[in-house]
Image 1 (cartoon, helix red, strand yellow):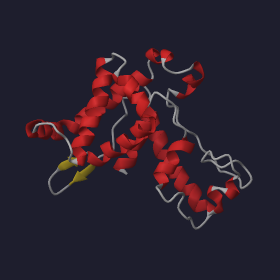
Image 2 (cartoon, rainbow, N blue to C red):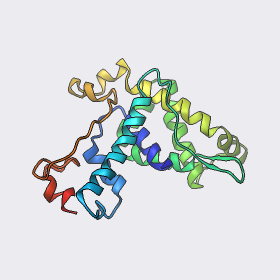
Image 3 (cartoon, rainbow, N blue to C red):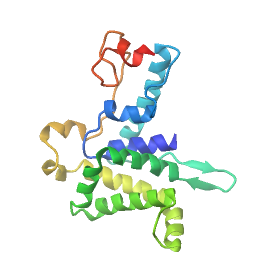
Length: 206
């Protein structure tokens, strides 16, 4: 759940539109849409996925007063486990790497630093950071609070007026991360995953 929450945040704060038809396959995994016992079970799964996505999107509507990432908690050590969340966010970043590079090169110190810091945290989470051990330990302790600050900074950058030069006007309605509203899909309607095929011959085939 923590990894998916981070993935949702990465998709939502990305300045460039990423449609559900593109990111949903990454949620299903490398084996594609799982086999469901019925159309109702598939619909329930989609409702849960899109429901959480909507919750994250809603919490990131400025001034982001309700935003809070979902971290796991180790009750035996009273430690906040943020690594899986960062892993999910980095997976979302890979969908539009050129966009994140543009943020770094934009001249916005806060947003650019947030991108670099997120990558630094991912390196720590993966165990391949080249930072000094003292810095790694310091960032491990501060990561849960830093992540909130970074997400709000990136979210405001992606929704700010500076984006007009980077993204065409037709993308404007999508950069505000308006929640996605799903509905019950009929068998002969276009599939909700965005493939363009009828539901009964796509996700509904299971």
